[in-house]
Every structure is written in structure tokens, then in C-alpha cells.
Image (tube, rainbow, N blue to C red; front, side, top):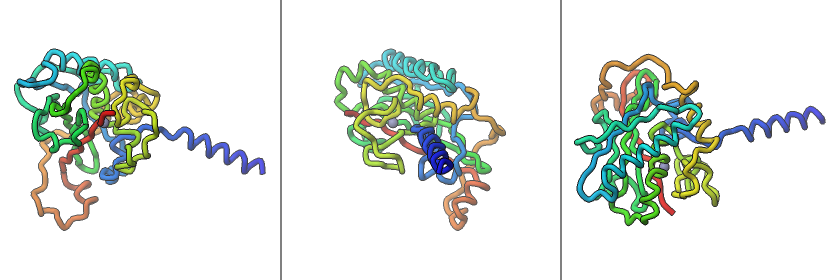
Amino acid sequence: MRICVGALVVCLLVSSSVSAYRTLTDEPELAGADGQAIGWTSWPIELAVFEQAGDLVGGPETYAALEAGIAVWDQSACATGSLAAIGRTPSPAQLGDGRNTVQWVHENWSRYGDRDAVAVTETQYQIKAGRYTLIEADILLNGTLAWHPSMLQQLAGVFAHELGHVLGIVHPCEPNGENGAPRCGPQPMSLMHPLYDPRAFALTGDDDEATCFLYPGGQPRQGAEIEEACAVASPGARASQPIAAIAIFACALLTLRRRRSRR
Ligand SMILES: [Zn+2]
């Protein structure tokens, strides 16, 4: 009987140690990664701000908020120095251009996210020889939304959340349990909670654990550098191949969008 109790205690301890954080590895659509951590293989991840007329917050203010968001992750256990703001860019965000861009979006927001989402981060990852690697991320701010002034003042917090997505962290829960995530409780669990809450702009232990899962030792993910350009297989060329075969033998670029809603 004591053995059974002991086993139960161990089981509970193991269960309680299961992290609340989630990363791209936990996304059902990335099940092919077979549990491998999906992150960047080189640092810093350089982000530039694209400024245009009509932005709800001007370029300098947007840039300052981005820097403040980066400073949040510089306090993390394993992602210090992973992100860098490198100034302005004359080019708008375009996934696939190899640059990480921050931009306000003023029309056709529905292409990116829900109407009331304040921001979206689009990430692009590469699959080659079975290895999943993040290679690009763009942060898009919803310029079609009627932002409350207090939310604009807390733009740094929005950036801090989106930068978590840039690193490869996803929401620990979803309001309706989307994407195989646990259903969210009444209170935000962390900075990476999907709903906007000004009280949740500091890193939590879960966030730290996520950075160390993705970047053990506080370093970019190790592995063979992928030097040549990733040539996407032409449509149909491997249509008859099982997905697993594509992941192993071919090279693919896929994109994900992650949004943050507001309360
Ligand atoms: Zn989010």
C-alpha cells in the first residue's frame, strides 16, 4: 500500500511539473516535428520598423515600444540578447523576404487576424532534413482597430507578447481550446496569454521555462547550418508523397499566424 501511495505521489509530482507553457512543438499542425524544439539557429533576431502615413503611433514611438518589449525578454532565463531592434526599414512586411519587420496594417486586416486582435505575428519556419527551424517573423499591428489610448501607452506590452511568438512560444491556452490548447481560465496565466491584460506584462516562470526549452543554455539552437536557399518543391511534384516524406527529404517553407486579442 505504501508503494502505491508513493507511486501516486511521484505521479502527482510529475504531473505538477508539467509546464504550462506551449511552443510551436505543441501545435497540431507541427506534429511532424515529432517533439523537437522549434526555434532560431542564429541570434540576434533583427527587427526593423516600417513607418507609413496614418500609423496610430509614429515611428519613434513604435520603435521605442519595440525596444521596451525586447528588454522584457532580455530579462528571461535563456533568451537574453536574442532580439535586436535595428532601426527603420523602407520595405513593408512581406513574409518570405528574409527580413523581420514590424508594421502597422491599415486595411484588409482580415487577411491577418480577427477583427478585434490588436496584433499578429507571422512566423515562417523551414523544414529540411527533418529539422524545423524558425527563419523569419513579422509583427503586424492592427491599425484598423479603435485602440484605447491606454492600450497605445502599453504598446510595449503588446510587443513583449508578440516577441514571445517571434521566439517560438505560443499561447499557453486558448479561449475555446483552439489548436489543441487547454481552455483558458478566468485569469491570464502569463505574458503569453491570448487576451490582453495590462497586469500580465512581466515574464513568468513559465515564460522562462519556455525560453530554456527552446534555447538551452541561452544559446541559439545548435545544428548544421542550412546554407543553401530553401527551394520549395513545385506544386504537385511531391503530391503523391506522404507528408512525412516531404518533411524528411524535401525543403518546405510554412507559415503560422498568431494573434493576440483584447479584452
Ligand atoms: Zn498571441
